[in-house]
Image (cartoon, helix red, strand yellow):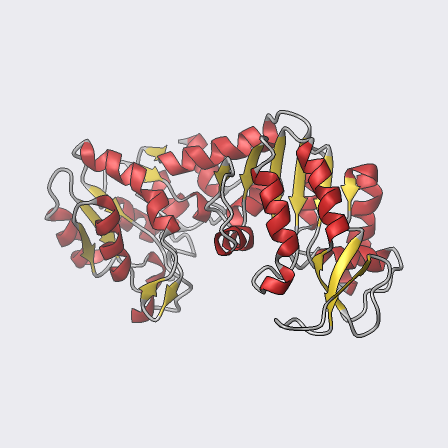
Length: 371
């Protein structure tokens, strides 16, 4: 079974266990049916074996959440893994060591995939968040064994399908974040589907610069100005940009702050959040929606001085009564830190969700369809 247990660590301790909790339903149901469950995952981006990125602490956390012992194997292939698997009884769970300790995983090496597959009889991919990667543990194993989607995978795909492919209308998308260049595909694809596309965060600066507005010391992607102009032209009235901005001289807490019209940022100042008029405008669109997709904060949400826009938009989305899909690592981190809840579905996928929003096919999902 492939899970995404790529949890953030702080001094060897798990800082956020949401991905562990998300994996529990499928693990639990398989173990309850007396399957011998062998779990593969990656952690971080190791270059070879790195004890600091061992999955051993994750095995202990899984045990606690699952309410049954999760054994741990010091490797994911070879004699160590074979012995650990051979010692399993019906209903027991084993976590293999970080698959990325072997570079063959990311290379989708056929022999490595075959060695992983030899440990099991059926393959379950429950790692939606890793399914945009054509790696051996995601795609390669599925070529050797009967392959199925786990419950988390099904829930993620169902939520994305409901929000984007078969939405109740009006469909409103809220997109934030820093760079147009990383989300131009998302913006272009969403414009074909939505009734309104609300854009906040630092990426709005690039749109303003493309319109000839002064942007002060704010982040602007000069190389993405053409992209921004094309999105504006294509978007027409669907594209909704902030009308006022919260600015400071430095991206730090405790700075002097001023709120100005979007076309009036002064030299030396930078826009770090959307202003109250923008919040009201966005909230009006959100209140009229039947379906909402939200990806990306509205400002520097990790600094309380510049989190008001993200908080207010989040509260509007959660309280709208619409079907709401929240996705993307920065967005999930923001709603967690701001204590926001009440959304229909919060996706565990960062890059995978982004690629789905961009209209790309995910290799880990495509292989399951083939299987």
